[in-house]
Amino acid sequence: MPQLISNGASHYYRLEGNPSRAPLILVHPIGADHSLWDLAIPYLLPHFQVLRYDLRGHGGSMATPGEYSVDLLANDLLRLADEIGWSKFSVCGISVGGMTAARAAALAPERIEKLVVCSASSHMHAPPGGWDARAETARTVGLNALATSMVERMFSAEFRATGNPHIDTLRTVFLTTPREGYASTVAVLRDTDLHDTLPQIKAPTLIVTGKTDPLVPASAGIEFKSGIAGARHEEVDAGHFPPVEAPEQFANVLTEHILGSR
Image 1 (cartoon, rainbow, N blue to C red):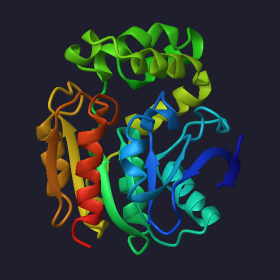
Image 2: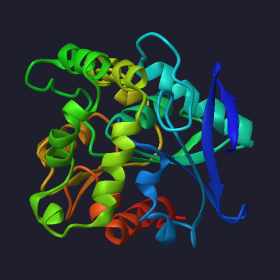
Image 3: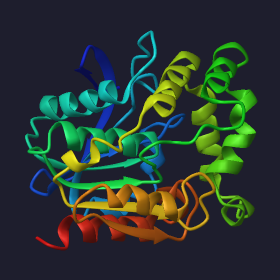
Image 4: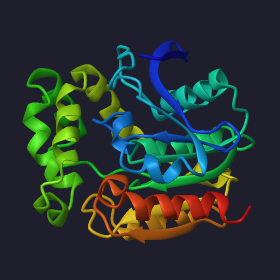
């Protein structure tokens, strides 16, 4: 299992594709891992060299103690790029991964060539009961208590009805996420408000939302877009995880944004 030490923690990563192609980093959401991108990867590799990794506290990466912050995760991303040898790159993240990607673009605007933020708000609204209750459930009861609602919130009813096997795959990944890693990442969703830092983002930015996403509607994407000069917003036919529900459409939208103006 390939590992890189980034910002004091070991991270599992996969580097795929021709190194002569444009560098792209993919950042997954909470309760997932690098495999969330599996269905989109075949559509991306003809155009990019892709680095995908497991967030701190997820998958094969180290679950360090204490609550995490968006700055911690953003610096993990930037240090991983350093370890790979990428001084400049494009980045796409989903949900907390999108917040992480946006924060990295604000912290190091000279390094981010293009930015894609998917299924993320500048500030994520708390679920019923609040973020702390969700973190406590993960720690004390386990993620099985959250799995059914996760599937219902992350995937549209239409997609769930197809019985796509990737739903079960991602449910299994969710259930095997370290309890402490999940709970520590919930703090990022609770505490992050990117509104004041969005103007620091200089990379051409695309905000993507799913048409059937109950968590991040188009209005949230439009609000996110309004904080970044020149940013665009686009909807795709999916729920909260477009690379899973509509991998080809999502990959085409991403590729056009990153490479279309070159």
